[in-house]
Length: 353
Image (cartoon, rainbow, N blue to C red; front, side):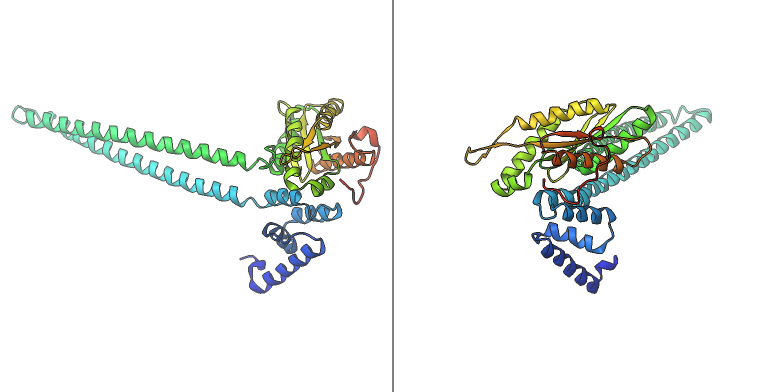
């Protein structure tokens, strides 16, 4: 049992979580309560840092941000599904082992019958017993054929079930790496792919760049037109990212209205071209409120770019991309900034999206 599951500690932590929600004007939904309860325990350093940054940047109460962060840190549904499928697969493997064990016993019994017959034949005159011996061998052979056919059917059915379970597990695994709203890779998938891209860059010596984009004034847009329209905008922007990356590139939703792209084997100059393509694609879109058909104008995107430095932690290049993103915001938004544009730039303590 964790210490926070003890009644007196749980009560204190629950009150602490509620005080955080009230202090930061965050709706006390079950999802938000779970996030801030675990924050109060202090057991997950990454979660604590993420929520502290959200408070600093004014995103703590944003429903999209909370949904994304909760999905990143609490993947109960996917974990439960994988555990359930894993249990079924384990049961099927055990059943398969029993089938094979039984088949071994049948084969052993048939072998004993043939050995016995061979012994009888080697005794000499078998004229009187030949019919009995032949009938015995024939009966044993027919029985073995029947058991073999049954075994084939059982093995075929079991193999089919194992294949189905394996495919379902892979489907669940893939779904656990996707952002449910946009269909892009989620933060978890981004972290995995970033590690792979760094390993690849280290072994092959190629360039690696990271883009980080943020929808300009999204909070204001969301507050004005509602979350349903905000979700529509997120899906539209995600499509712009998806349609402008290719090959081994990975576009992901990083959190809230932030998106990232991993660009293996890509120089800083080529990364800038990709970023400009995405920015222009977003700028060209016209937003229409589906429920009324009302035109809501256009949206824009600010993008920061960083180049991975061999040997550094992944977080360092991501933080530099974030710094460049803030520089793009402060340059007037709807633009792209990379490290070469900046020199040394500190990300502001707070920024308006």
